[in-house]
Length: 276
Image (cartoon, rainbow, N blue to C red):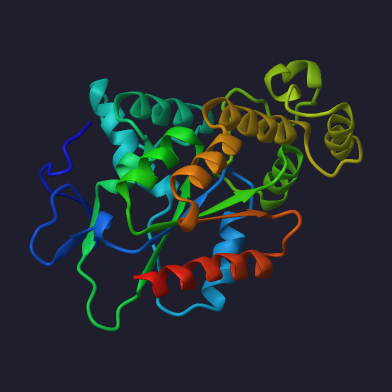
């Protein structure tokens, strides 16, 4: 593991990694709400609902940003590459996988290395990080972030694909897919195994009705499949229930509205504040 007292590195204004200099604090000594869940489970929506009814909240750079600032440049350095932006989702999964193989906990390890300017009186009292995934990450976080609370968000894979199609995020890219192409489940063998026949028909119907392009559906199915290959969301929830039962809430975002999810998370934060 990389030593936690590694030399301080300024990542961007107001954010660093390594040993905290004077006037800075390690994130392991700060209250943090960690969202846990794969793409499309509703983390951003829950955060927006939470912030609308909660004062003193500060958003940390999200998972994507921490990967860009710390994880991917580290792996590129191992390969002798000049650090640069990586947009292909499957390639990003490969970089984060390799970081995880070197440093137990993966993105959680990177998160635990962060340092922030020491909060002043009246400054936000809670930092939110979006988010962690999988068994290794949450195990490391539960053990390394003693002040952290964890909100695990779930949604079925078919719903995740539909949400990715709806949000049309330019980040949801997969190389090697030709725009305007069709869609066949036979060409998506890895993703196909995640869905029942009814769910396959439900997604394919979106293309037949002209609601989405075939290549869009193929990309989103590939993203969901790649995440499931690298992360087990169900194992993550079970580990947190075992390792940090008093610091964890689990919410199904298909049966809870954003406001209900935010309320459940808020109860966890209130309980944590009362116990400190």
